[in-house]
Each structure stands twice: as structure tokens, then as C-alpha cells.
Image 1 (cartoon, helix red, strand yellow):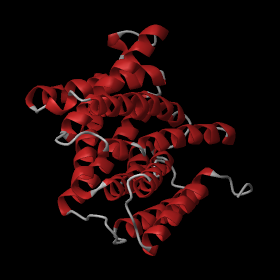
Image 2: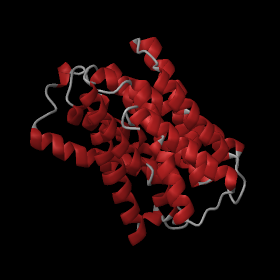
Image 3: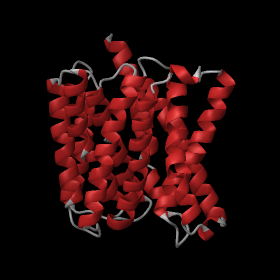
Length: 291
């Protein structure tokens, strides 16, 4: 793998992470009484439909018998688990903490999974970047201000981080046999099917409002279809550990939107945490000579 290909892939993943960072803020604009489980299910459904249209147009799906459906099911299950855990965590513990803890817990898990299952080497740059970013997440999570720390919310956020790292590992394996478009279509649509019972059992009266439609379309098209399309392309040339660490651009975006758009405030400790996360991303993304 050339450095140029790795750099290009890293920027794809960074773009995906920036889009993911808007999910928590978008959820805040949903009408009162919304169900986070329904939002997670609809996000997968809308994103899956968008990706399916693209794949059918490009004829990328291939034959059903060519797919490893065990891997597809695992990826779909981890995707569904992430949706439910993440949105529930945001409700319980706030946009900033929910996003930061959820994604901040994923790099270590991603590094260990990549090392043991794919024998990826954990470089010094990755180790330094991960330490900086996780330290930043810790500072930001416990910085005081009007940030809510909820034990159940933190546990849900960690579960979301583990699900995300596991999902990344499975997708990396599928990319050895199928195109990014086809993989994202099959996995996201499968995840939507797994969560579809939630749409039948939960109260959806809040959906019949203009703001609900805008939120669901943004989550499904921008933060699911487009972002996962970018992520799969980047993952072709980036290791699992690096991909998960690069995703810490998501809490950077979420924190910025939370503080600027939603009026959430943090003390100096929180600002220091943001700086550490940013430093970790620079270490991993920018070559030493350029820095």
C-alpha cells in the first residue's frame, strides 16, 4: 500500500466522520416525544434505500450466492446495535458526552481487533494519536459545565463504540471480495431489516411533523448513505485501527456543534480536551514532514 493511497483513504474516512458528527445535533431538532430507537431504525431504512438505488443503477450487487452471509449478518447486527445504543446514549447523557464517549471508546477496541484478527501492526503514530485523542475525550467528558454525566448513558455509549469497532473489522474483510457500494447496500439494508420491528411497536405520532421529516432525511442520506459510502472507500487502504481513530473527528464535530449551535458550555478542561483530540487527529492524518 502506497502512502498516497493511505492518505487518500484517510481523507475519505475523515469526511465520513465529519458527517457522523452531525447526528447528535440533528436529533436535538426532532420534535418533542420522539423515540431514539425509531430514529436509529429510520436512519438505516432511509440510508439503505438510497444505497440500494445507487447499487441497482450501477449493477454492483452481483449474485446472492457470492456473499458470505455470516459476515453480512454480523456487520448488520453491529450496525443496528450501534444505532440503538448511540441514540439512546445521546438522550440520556447529552450530545457532547454521548458522542465523545461512544466514539472515544472505539479506537482501543479497533486496534485490538485489527491486531488479533488481521495481524495489523500498531504503529507509534497510531499509539500516540490514540492516547492523545482518548485523553481529550476523558477531559471533555468530565469537564463540568452543563454537561450531563449519566451512568446508563455512558454504558450505552461504550457499547456503541464497541459495536462500531467490530463493524469496521467485518467490513474490512468484506472489502476483499466486494465493491464498497455493494457492501454498504447489503449491510445497511440488512441492518434496517433487523430494526424494522421497532417501527411497528413504537409510537410514531411525532413523525407526522415537518421537522421530523427533515431530521430523518438528513440522518438517512447524509449521515448514513453518503458517510458510509465514503467510509467504505477509505477503509480499502486504511487499517482498522487507524480508521477507528480517525473517526474521532466525529466528536470534534459534535462538540463544536453542541457548543456553538446548541449552546452547550464547557470549562477550560473541556477546551483542553478538544485540543488533545485535534492533536491526535493531526498526528495520524498529516505526515511528519508536512506537520
